[in-house]
Image (cartoon, rainbow, N blue to C red; front, side, top):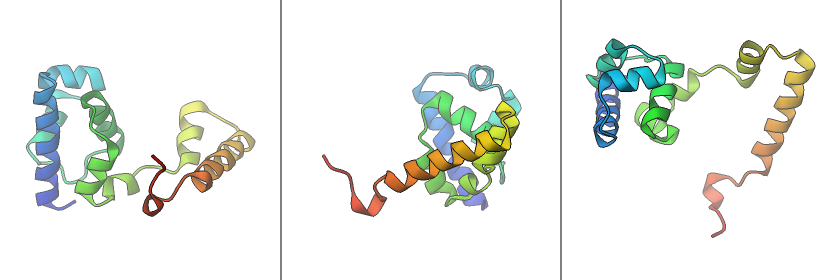
Length: 121
């Protein structure tokens, strides 16, 4: 991520934290990341923040993933592991169980309207 993107991402997180009236330490405790990590993020000093930590802090602050992806031009999402790796590591699933999840996930993605098609309202 470029320096300008890192600073913009930092501003987004800082504004969200202040809007929620949370301290750096409180956000760190809620997200399970260090005070120093959040400080560096907010100051735009992190060119490649760990996606897992970024996601945890964003969730605490109510920042939608789409906003992060817009700022990072999709870089944060590209750094995430594939669904197979996640389920294998987190839940110790068998290859057959993971295949079932992947098939279901693929079906959901196929059935989902494409963003350019819009949604019925």
